[in-house]
Image (cartoon, rainbow over all chains, first blue to last red; front, top):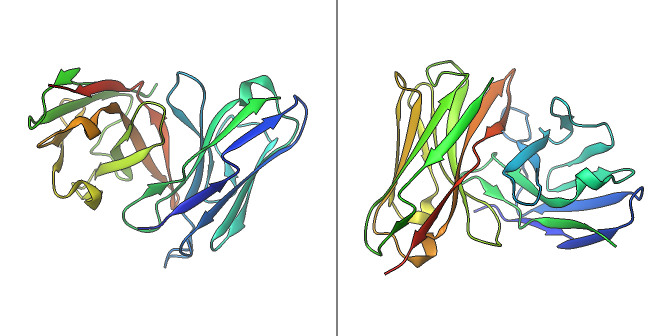
Length: 112
Length: 122
């Protein structure tokens, strides 16, 4: 199975700071069709996960442009510029390139 | 407006079969490029993908559950189902269903249900 390793596990920030989360895969996530099925989800406290980014760097409808996804192959990053209170929660990367589909372990973004 | 809602037994005993229903509205599971997945989350832990069923009836399962899973759908009634046989305490979790859509070769979970808590206990 593909293992997605997220770092850090926990990230303490001040509002307005930039935050960066890494997601490293045990295998390349580029599929044979040329697409890379790497997504980012945010789970706010007490809520279901919500989609932020799909195919590495595409923001989902309504997601603010302070969320930026990047990367290729096995190394991916989610950057949040100017963290706002509604950004707090647990971030998960997810891959659907290889079966079985897998999630990263999560990164908890909290206030300092 | 797309909505999904999970329902289940709440509590069941070890070795029983868990039956979950995902009732949805705002889309059809007979529409090309639409799938529904089941994902679970033990309390305080991360997410685990379990299974997916798509419009053309293709199915995918997480082999870590060793053939205990069966996913199915009732297109006419806008429902998807998941059965897990021989449950034990490790199956205690919140179970989510989520729509997975394919749009111009991009795929993602764009809508999620609120989740249903399942507790396995004797």
